[in-house]
Length: 336
Image (cartoon, rainbow, N blue to C red; front, side):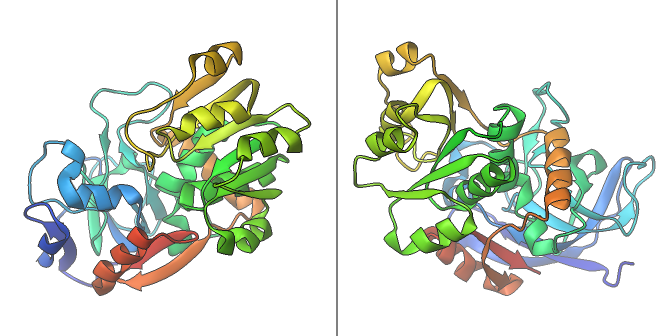
């Protein structure tokens, strides 16, 4: 199936947007347990901007290729590969080596310091990929490894989301919109807090029951909309001082999932709200392979369609990163 003997990839020899460059290299041959994937699409995440800027403070070898989420087709398999075969459509896992509940110390995130996906072909361990949803194209499928799985892991895997509950979602980014869709899929009510009045209609059309503006007293409004109970689950994508306000809106015994850090790297919260409210506050670092397989089955069974804000050609990566930095309703995808 390999039509070319070379691959193209974006890489950085040192940190900074201005250091991004395309290079052409020979196609690698898969070793034992490895697969070579022809990339069909790469979904961008806010993390990619941080990795390109400064590596998020991590130490790893340069040059490196950014991008953690891809969907593509297996074009070659090394000795011993049994889970997947040439011709299979796959998506990668965000954490290479995290298979199920036990998190191994050697697990590595894709797109730095692990292999990056912004390439025409990528070589990865076969254990770091799963079958892609049959109902999605490559661009849609590429949104699952990070954004989709993060929302799924917070709500379905660790949160045991049940019909009739209320989910409070902050923002309208990739994880947030998956949270709205998964809440609807599970028969729950999604309330979204947004800073954009312009995105209200789109968010309601996606399945949100209510969209509240960030500048108002939204914790009190969440209480009012839930007859005083509060939200059972909160996807906290701002963090910083916003966590304290989320605690004001969560139900007794509810769960707050810390996902984003747009409001700062230091959390600020009331001791009394957390302890007297018996609130579970959990950090979410995407999820493991088995949960991704569960998400794929749920997507196919329910015809869930991820929200794509824009698709860019491979050579247009700088424009795609600019769009990501400005913010978008849905995911930004690069198509080789």
